[in-house]
Length: 387
Image (cartoon, rainbow, N blue to C red; front, side, top):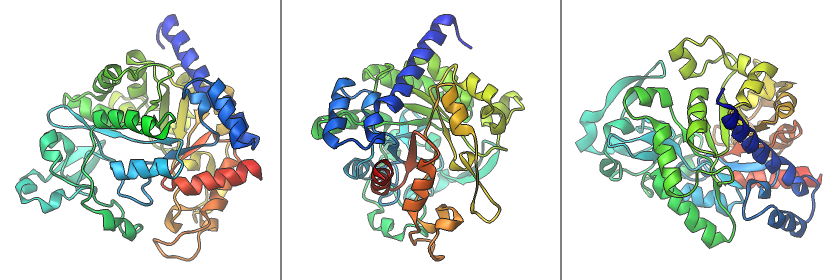
């Protein structure tokens, strides 16, 4: 825990993000758009209170329709109604810039394999305990990465997205921050982003610490305040704790499967698993330095061995009790990603009953959700709040 001043700051930020939940009550009650707009106006110029609930977060943009982490994907997310765009899974380059890629390994998300000049960069590394072969952002300068173009990551599920292979370059985080301002002006309302520090322990050991680089850019662009439209997230609690000492932005701890251990815990010998972090005691600790959690959907409703939904857990109630908001991940329209009872047929690229799945998860009381299909999420929320 930090000093009393730090704790007071943290509590203030937590209250602010919690107010995003309460301040969006108009959406919950199904008030008219005019009434919600009036509420938003009273909440101040684009503060978190102005976001509707459940909040629809465009996962890596709209991965369901465009190659992820491209400006094409980010802008379409806004066009389709996303309240927040997850613009930025942040990975460093060899020369210390931050770029937006799902993973540091870029063989699956760019056309690097088509560049003979980079053939010699292909290598095998151990990334958070997993042997991974490919090309890695930290082995390229920004100028070199800018010669590459994005491709669809899961073409078997999204063959239509391959139409856009090669169209967009890899964005930098600084470009995203400038894009955010441009889109806010263009659209006449505040655009929110939700970047993530990727594998922070791994990169710190390489001398490429992420948190200080993120903080420096946020300060440069005046977006390091508690009411700034930038929410920061990480799967490593110590990364969020470090950010808590560097910036005043809302902070969210991402949580994988119950039996997993955050990699920073593995590295430091902390024996706790995610199951320990989601106990009332664990959540109280998280609430000391963060304002929210981003659990996998299976921590909200368990899954049976056959992929069907199991039991609703107490996570939503337990998190709300200590003032944390919940933004679970990830809702997708395609069959393989849906609980068994919402699938239609067996086609890997076929859509199931995504609306039914959204409705089921919204009913748990979650505050928002990451989705690859922002338009589906917006319609599902409309059904839910007016139903």
